Amino acid sequence: MAKFDEQVEAQMVDHMNKDHVDAMRDYCRLKKVIYINQDPKMLAIDQDGFDMLVNGELLRITFENRCATPKDVREALVNLANQARNDA
Image (tube, rainbow, N blue to C red; front, side, top):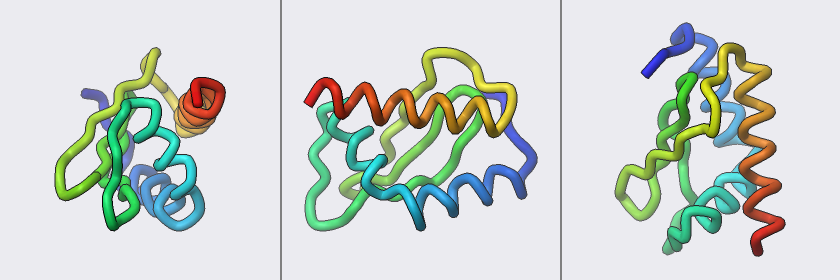
């Protein structure tokens, strides 16, 4: 698992938790995980995927391809959300 700089990772995680809870709900739908009583929360993100807390349990979602930059991560996250919305 290749990691980003701690500050870069923290900024991405914070941004997702503040501004993109709807996308995290989509990721749950994509993985057929039902969240109950509490929205999913992103805990960590790296070049290979990300971890969310869902229903008190860790859910790991991997990217299709390794992401070298935060811009690559953004594209991967948008693609996952779009995939979930198209599959709905």
